[in-house]
Length: 262
Image 1 (cartoon, rainbow, N blue to C red):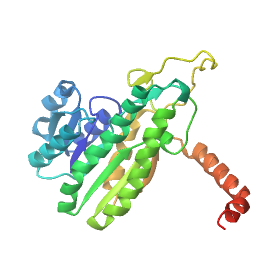
Image 2 (image 1 turned 120 degrees about the vertical axis):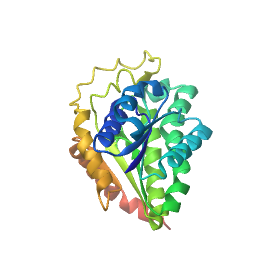
Image 3 (image 1 turned 135 degrees about the vertical axis):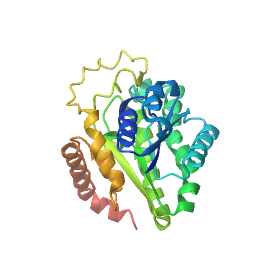
Image 4 (image 1 turned 60 degrees about the vertical axis):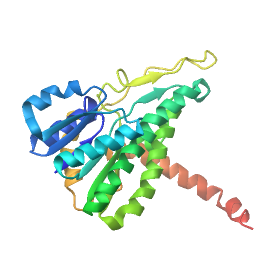
């Protein structure tokens, strides 16, 4: 199996790159600093192709995907994992904050997806895994820009899944909950706090072990009928409560909604 994985130098991307290589797959592993992948090249040789990529550069994304396909003779799995979280209340966000968040988390995934689609269509098979988040289906205060980027990717990818199914291409929105990936420390950015808002309390997250996701990602890409959406971790209970509350609200206001039809 041939993989293209963005954000391969750390976190989930590193774990999944190693998991694929350990079982004998081949991986085009991208990173802003591909030198961080030198140990994988030393260990796995030609099975890994390190590529320098800033996913916000559309032309570079297209070139990297094509280089990977040319090098390995095709692509089977494309994993859009590169991304970060921006912490800041909506009022605190600058234009640059929001645009940078969307450029990486949303547009970066879009550019890689667009680059891969002609290759996957020609093959008549392939699997695109969009790493969204539990935060792609529910939202919490203080991280609205991140949610905006992930909700956008979820919607785009649900449309995409319907558009490309006839070509044998499957799409999965992979939705991890909190994990010990240094995402909160190394991989996040913060807005300047507005003193009118109370100071944010320290979060006490029940975080998962990212190493444990290795078997799950392999099971997902090996599935004959992979799901459109899949959690990683213990998100189901919280999301179930959220969606039950949505349904109740919609039902409570259904008479008003119907009257508005005319």
